[in-house]
Length: 167
Image (cartoon, rainbow, N blue to C red; front, side):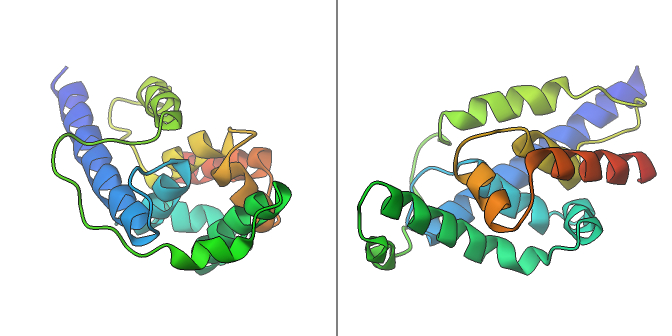
């Protein structure tokens, strides 16, 4: 029981770290509310290094994720006939006051992270868990970003599960 409480507290610290980092990534890109793509970047920032291991296992440099997000946004704008140059005006935003806010798509991500089956009570939430959940989405910026990187969600999820099992 005590181990389970410790694991939950560690998970809450990890989620807090993820939320803060995702918000910084979103604001730096001119977006007020972070979405799954910002949480993907935040997972890469976690000190556990497991999200980076997932990308290394797939032969993808995690340093390219930010550029892939930009390319995904540009392709989405071009797909609706808008000028991708509109992205150049995305100046960083200051932090907002008040309660934390994220895009609606993050509700499902957070629910899936909370429901992740644990191999043991000692297994804490990691960057690999975050990537596995985000990679399960078939639509959205995060899914398009993975495709820009030459990846599909199933491969990322499988690699993340392998990293978790090895961890």
